[in-house]
Length: 259
Ligand SMILES: [Zn+2]
Image (tube, rainbow, N blue to C red; front, side):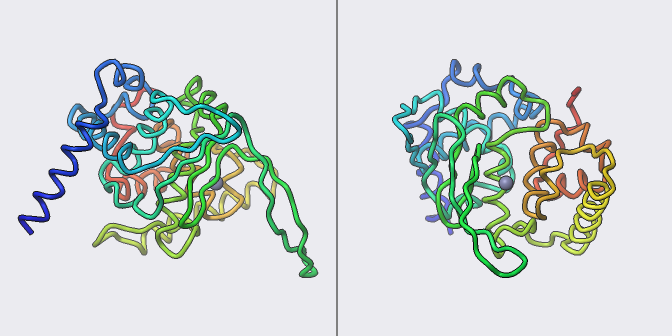
């Protein structure tokens, strides 16, 4: 146990040495909505996680985009926010992050009501593969940086899918920490999701992006975006959902947030 801890400490120290988050780097990201309200202890922990994340992950530029250290830092910092307390083991099942310059086309099979499979193309700003890479559009990341407190964040969205996928695939039920009250989570999330579907069917106004109504997996990813970038809004919109996310992520971003 002692040896394991020593090895872990050595790994962290070597990551900090090889991929340090220097003061000038930190200054460029510390004012982001998902970071600025963290406590100083949480910020210090985030800086360490960023270094370890950068050591563990490989960035691949698609369509000739050149990935700079600043781009890696922007992705790493926002990806590490959801696992600030859960730990980087939540991201241990993959190593690659692919970045496209803009939204990218993907092809997938779609089954109609008669069981016939159609090949369809979709334009995406991000995608998470089960046991595969996270794929992101740099143009959309930059757009989120400009509007960082409006409930949209493609990085948090795709990494929330990664957290979700650890528990029997993307189903909106993430891998819970031990002793977590999963019954309460299930009750709250089922109710909130069905309420959203009902409002959508009756063409009523909704307080979160309707993309969340696509599936329970998308609901979890979308409310995670709101939780970290627009926490007061989510708290007002659905206090029980906010509370479950607070217990799961072990963070309370609404506490110091003003927007
Ligand atoms: Zn999604």
